[in-house]
Image (cartoon, rainbow, N blue to C red):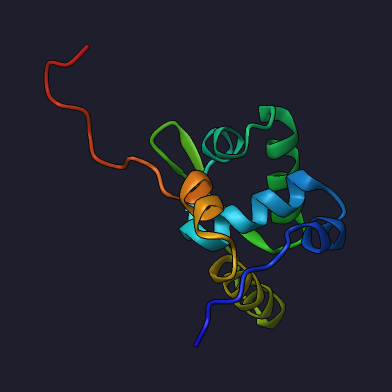
Length: 116
């Protein structure tokens, strides 16, 4: 079966802002994220991403946890969250491969010891 690719424009409009859309898509694609990582992946300023994460946490879509000095955000619980996560995962699977690789595949291996 041929892979279906989607246009992101309807999704951006659905979520009301590009930052909101990118923030939720990042959490869907990666399972978790922190503000700086999301902002870098999508070339956004940090403050709007932080604002979106706090907003989504305040309504129960996301939960956060401190890991060291970094606040990571994860999906919350509940039927609405589960439905949204399922929808976004399907949309992530339909993104063009180049878009997916550019935004959601990052180097996760630690730096070589002694490297400056």
